[in-house]
Length: 513
Ligand code: AHR
Image 1 (spheres, rainbow, N blue to C red):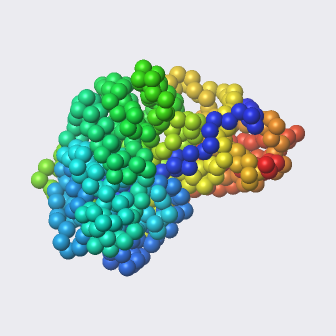
Image 2: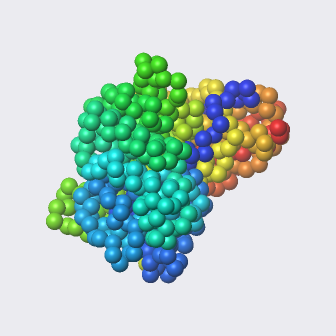
Image 3: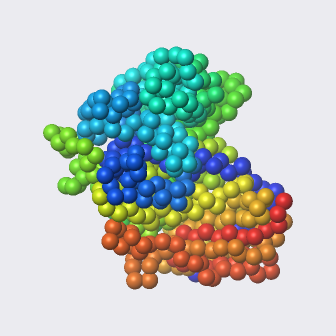
């Protein structure tokens, strides 16, 4: 049996839980918007075309902030196409995903949808084909009260009150050769600096995210962040990170350990930010917006029913099926470890967005005219978003190891914990990476005296299933949370047995503040 001992001390905390860590992402890509969140004519659609069944699942998932409208899409997007009378909006070719964008859904629709979903908006501006003026104009359109060309246009278009969008991304993945209007770090650094200035002149209260590397494997990783921040450190608040992981060639042990890479990636970006801060003698602190992360089976990018942009030459379709990955038990456990990694870095990662929200590599799936359901990865996200409150605790973990090809020996039990002093609860988020062995866990709570187990749930392999079991349209609840039975408090310490390949959440009652 795998064993792990976790020591928690009330005096050792990392940060207030940044509630924006539980963000998501809606891109005009595939069926995320069209037939995802928006499908006029669907039996569940409201008068604005928002799917009520999807909205209900989104509320249950509980994202706090949603990034919009892209992604690669934003680098060729003209935001003005998506406002004003729908019948006058142009149809355009979207070169990023090789589709036809009808513009039936745009900024006003997203603002209304976000209100219904109770999420903050994180709006991205196009710095691929556009620049300072269009970004500046969009802030004026969205946030200026009235009495100017752009703000009055918003009012004419039916929104008397400003949208008051606080969080803005200065483009998307502009280091990537696949990006429309990609740039060198020098070009982007200057553009980000000037665009940030101009946007802030319109609304000084906004927060700005500069584009970091598209992933850790980019040849320019590190130097890109350094150059961009050397130009724009004073003008921005965050630098972005993106990372997608998948199982390669059946190497499930390494896949289950990918949070080790995520931890190291974050530490590397923190080091780069701080090097620029020190060299530039800056006093303010730039932090991280991890605004795209997830499991994504990129090796399955070009399939017959979901051809990718590159191989789809000649096929311009509206909202085709794109990268609709079906997630299984293993993926859910990995997602749980990513959420732990983000929590562990809550002192520097202040925003994070799982990519994406519906259909496109998403926790929620929907069919056109049909049902909507939760994928396996829905569960760890929903519980962490709901329960991670108060302060992130700094854990001392002494765990047995599992050996992996890519990362050597790694802890079999991966954990994060938060302490909500006001409500008198501790939430433990626990992954058992071992495929065969149950995890025998002891949690020593120094100075916190747990009195009872309030709730304990686990997601693991179903009795009649395997590690690849998943939820699908005609079997929507195959993978989910069930009670974790083997958990107790013995002599003030928590004792639990975590099934092999599992993700668990345990909430404890402790003394209130
Ligand atoms: O989330 C899918 C795509 O992945 C996004 O459009 C892009 O930013 C990233 O490469």
